[in-house]
Amino acid sequence: FPEGFSTTRRAAAGTPPTLRPKAFNGRINPGWSMTSYSRLTAGTDAPADQDLDEPAPLRPMAPEDFTSVFTFPRGPAAGTCLHTLLERLDGNRPAREQQSLVGEVLELGGIDRRWLAATARWLDDLRGVELPGSCRLDQLVAGDRMHELSFLFPLEQVNIRRFNGLLASIGLPPLAAAGTVLQGLMKGFIDLVFRYQGRYFLVDYKSNHLGFELRHYGPEALAECMDSHQYHLQALIYTLALHRFLESRITGYAYETHFGGAYYLFLRAMHPGYPPGWGIHAARPDQQLIEQLDGCCRGREASL
Image 1 (cartoon, rainbow, N blue to C red):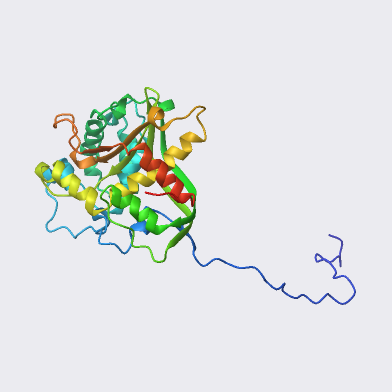
Image 2 (cartoon, helix red, strand yellow):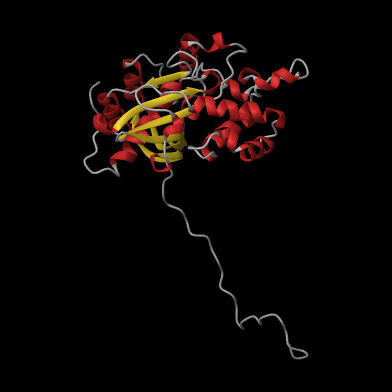
């Protein structure tokens, strides 16, 4: 710049105007909220997710401890690690051929790299399990699967009494939500949605630690876990979200034709050598129930 040339802009001459905030005369509805499955079940008797409560190890890890899925680390970091691997792995190649990715994700999760071989083997085993009514995860091609499907749908003056009546009709406990009306947005993420023979299925991965032996993961133990954590309610919410998603995108969509069902996969109990269905909770909610739930969330009144 020339000597004496200012680098700042000169203020305009004159008196600046007096600024005043505008008065707000609107009304904010205090009952509006952003909610989710976990918020809906907060305050109930459902225990905290066992994967969020990792006890301190009772003894140093021995070499053989790095080979069993039952001693694989617990806690949110471990659960996130497994979810990330199932999302990022090339679904049509064995995990043992992708050990650099497995090692990278383990390291990012703060998990000892001595778990690398066992984790790759575990992922190959669980992806090789036949899901009842469909196929194996390792049979899905890229165009038939969608990971981490996020959803956000409105709750329009939801009558909590009616909502609880729908839950009671299938033997589920009521919501502990305060008040008589729920209004706002329901949000969430579905771990995996896949298409098989023209039908769409949703998958939720569960890395819950139920014990250190296979017998701790039998059908009765899984049923108790589904009940105690209110995963049945979560499955209903996810089914409704996918139902709305498909309805908005498929010409001539029909629930009975296009929706295949929901799978809750307890990862520590899945192996091709176990009895069929072991480690898997499969459900397909009744169409009428989903339609009633949909109407309830849209604020429509109807008899139960």
